[in-house]
Length: 234
Image (tube, rainbow, N blue to C red; front, top):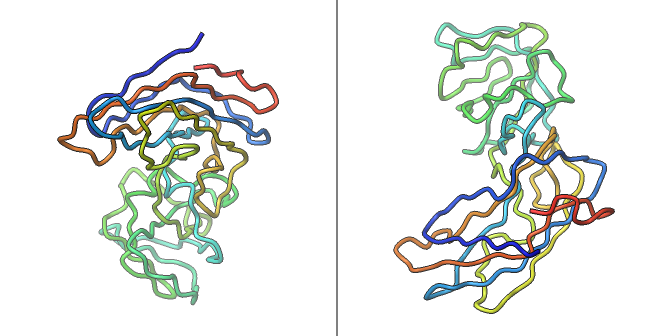
């Protein structure tokens, strides 16, 4: 039986599912029909929010390591906890306002880093030191000589498959897209975040349409494995 969801008002962020386990070796298909009902076309995103094994949301910066910049070893931290001493590394990190410093506390750079990545805006890097805009939280404990730091970059925490900042027509329109695998070195709307164990899906509704009478409706929303499409009927 088709199920319908209405989205009314501006900047609505609405989950339409509970946690769903994900197999990163499998391709998934999202499919739905939608149409606008308001005085003008609604603008919206479909989103997938990814969660790690502890059901912590995986931020864009946490999962988005910048390629071609090797990890550096953390040797110490200043009293104000803003300056990170590192083993000599003369590579120059490309300056970018979205740059973040990710800590791999046990040195295992093949896993997700700590969850504090989004707070760690980088001011500058020299061959022996990385300075942060804000102090590292005092509860964070390093293993000096073991902990690694990597250059990450802030991006959206959501995967926007099928519908990404699009205007929704007044007539019923079908949207679908495939999502599969993951990547540590890029943000894409057709791959899950690195380290994803579970997801929730939803809509960012009527985005950027403040003070406008906009609404839209969704039906036949399905998210599931392409090999068994319909496993996760919403």
